[in-house]
Length: 537
Image 1 (spheres, rainbow, N blue to C red):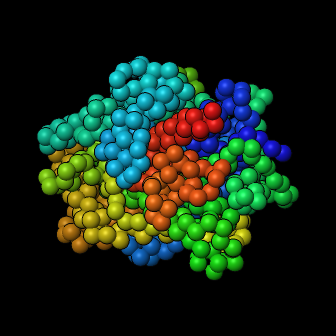
Image 2 (image 1 turned 120 degrees about the vertical axis):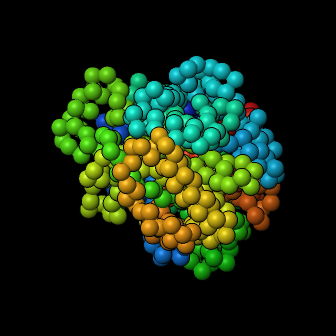
Image 3 (image 1 turned 90 degrees about the vertical axis):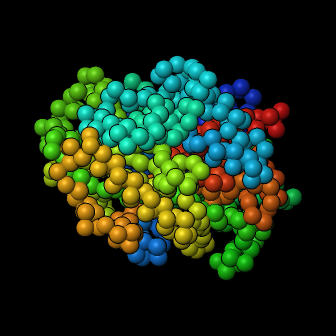
């Protein structure tokens, strides 16, 4: 079958593309999804992401290769395998990133991607609970809810502690400045997850010119005799099918699977492809390179007053919270557990905020595999997690084999630069400093992990290496830039040297943004759709 546009991946970006490219009625659009529909109740209720964390039916459940910088550990990398992609299973923290992040994109040779140019697309996708403003949209599909005024009482002690230390504060991480302590916004509407599948794709699927196929794993791209991308071969329920595109094939399979599909199709480093038995069609050595992620560790504290641990640990408490949610669409089930945090300078020498914090009024250990459940610590507690905003370590995505059913090799190379190691120490010292502020210290019985005995820089780094995990913000593996030797797509997201092929997802980020990357990924989709329509006119 043939369509004007074939989009591979119904994730945060792909759902937006399908909606925007089809809304005029002029073009036919096919969306290809390897997973199934997002009809489960757990995709709608915000706290439901705990149910998908280790569910292979909706989660690719990837892991990295052994990481030298993390004591040789493999790090878990959940990725959505369902309509809505990772936007269906994430924790919904809505952060656009710092203005400097996007100005850096533009300075890297990508005109039109500076902070002033991308702001209109952030506003286009958003309906903010407080209405339209110079910084926020009031009529977009994604609904954004501030958690201010809804957080657990122990969160106030964290915010007060930051104030006592004279740290900056911000009422809006998505406003004039990202810097400071504050409460996060989440993408919810009336207590339900508001993501690109629900808000863009579900309405678009009512149009006659939009189609979607499920359980369809892309095998390789199909090319016309002149080298133009002409479609994709998929395996659907054991049957191979080819879907053709009149205008463009668009990859939106994410930072892991987009470079994997390019490499399976002969687009990547020619020598590496030949070693896997794949004929090189277009030598693009940057495919799979420049992989970036946010790496975080948590400090655990025992509190002398109730936190969410108690209610989440008991069936009665969970039932009470569930009833509250069903009757009011409010309460902890309607929120992210990552309630407050902030963006800070780890030292006075830093030119901009380089450490992100999460304050969580629930302390829990993430199980190492699916055989265990995420349960709260057996005491009243909370945690403070931190990560570098803009880590400088770079990794790669590489083929494990020429078999499309085999997961790609994920090699982030965490903590492979001195700067990233320095920021581990800065972040650890910042957490300790905030925990010692009078208002927060007053509610702390003890630091459980890493414990006060970890006092030296060396011991704090050892703790981080042994306990850090991904915050699941993989990006950059098909970076945008002007040079085909060092980048994969140009500023209009066209793959260098391959006609009819674009990439629109987080893999095009030249550098990871400060904060959670779902919002900037959706912005890239809005801007990408606008450019595709301009070029098609």
